[in-house]
View 1 (cartoon, rainbow, N blue to C red):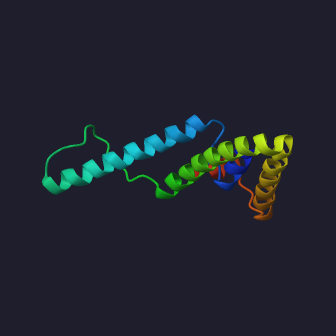
View 2: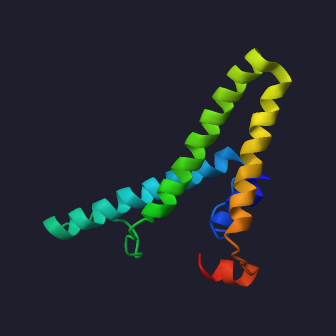
Length: 123
């Protein structure tokens, strides 16, 4: 349910099936920042610092924010879920279910329908 919710809200740009994928995407974006920074520095000092023929591309800041939010929310949920499970046992799942249901209602209330082909062309 969580993956479907994030996929719908992000327009199928981000998938969160595995947290390792989120961290891998964050790593890729950080590498793009570093390469972009080196490219800008190279232009300033007129020394080639970027290897390869591809022009350094500025990474997507909104995507970085989205991925960081997903990672932090996942880590917060895991930590708070463990604490709640110790204190209120199985009732802790009601809180998680309510949060996912609220997110699903929000996504459904937006009323946006994305075709698969449109989502792919936005990438």
